[in-house]
Length: 117
Image (cartoon, rainbow, N blue to C red; front, side, top):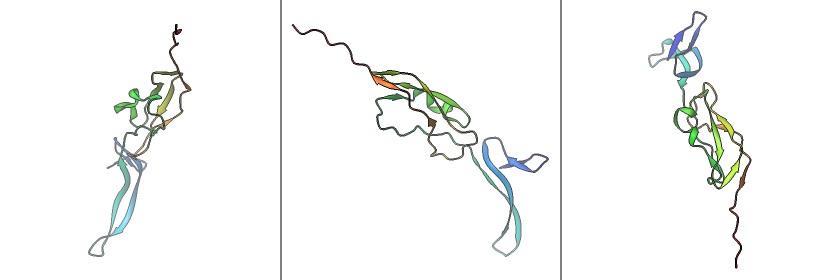
């Protein structure tokens, strides 16, 4: 899906990529121009992590994982630490692209042990 910009062609809203004209040969050996290069924008998926008990991606589900958006990654209890940002690149058309993120510095927080009589 493409739209004219006055200076050429661009992908329509909701699509990303490079809109371009291509010349192809059809089934009856005639040449024709077709527009190509645009794909539907796609949300990023949650990253695969070694320790699923350590990080909380709750705020990164749904619209927050849309192209050009960002969200917060937190430490999941019983871990404590800072939060970091995760983001999906603007114009993302790859439905298998994982969110770009930095791991928060999460440390396990153990409860105090009571004295044993």
